[in-house]
Length: 322
Image 1: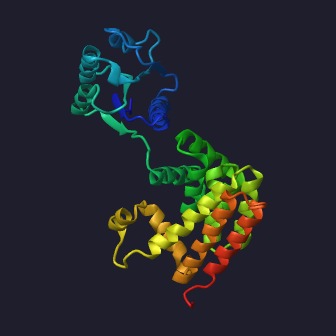
Image 2 (image 1 turned 90 degrees about the horizontal axis):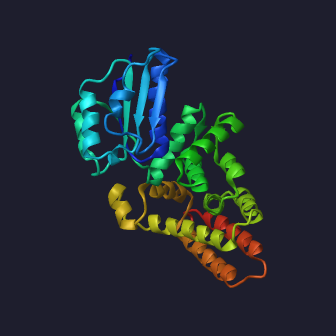
Image 3 (image 1 turned 180 degrees about the horizontal axis):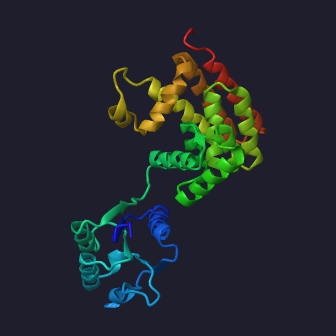
């Protein structure tokens, strides 16, 4: 059998854990299509049972034995697993899944010392990591996606990797592989987060028609005007923050000083290329007025938002000549 006899999967990201197990099973079945898979639920392993489960089958053929939640096995069962791993059975692949952390660490250490193959599946917690995941998913499905569109998809769908993976698969299938901002907005415009920030991004980038179209989509799908005003304000304040930073500041030092993640600073720096200091000041005034109007119960909040977007785009057109 070409697969390592003992595989240690460490981490809490369920999708990545399931994929790691699936890859091992697929590799085993590439050599032995009839290989049996025994997937033990947490608590499914009892003393002495590992020997029973890894013994040769009457009908021959390979096995994949998956032990989940191995951090909960306890001292005796963990020792039994390590003992087995010292002399694994032929035609059996043992997959041990451990959440990581201090609990049951002796098992991880024991299998690591025995040179078990280790697959890390840490929890994906940072926005940048989820964006990287989306881009990798799209590439893996044969498509292409820009960094901004990937970020928009994360903002729209949320943090769950399974949902993100499903969204990537759908978008590649439905767009022919070229996934851009418009495709993300078209399929996920009902999500308040993406709708509000999509409006703000288009306005800040000077794309009046697109910004107004995003605004109408957002309002039509029930996004509260106050959320859109908030997104506009955040976007313009970001311009002021990054634009006012010391010229020599960059990287992690700049991120720490401004209290903004590096990816956001990079994006705002790109957006700043079309702006002057006076233009940013004018846009700040426009969003402050809009905030007061919308929160104060303006008779026509949609009109107030349209006017604000037009003023932001006009402020950008001042460029640096002013």
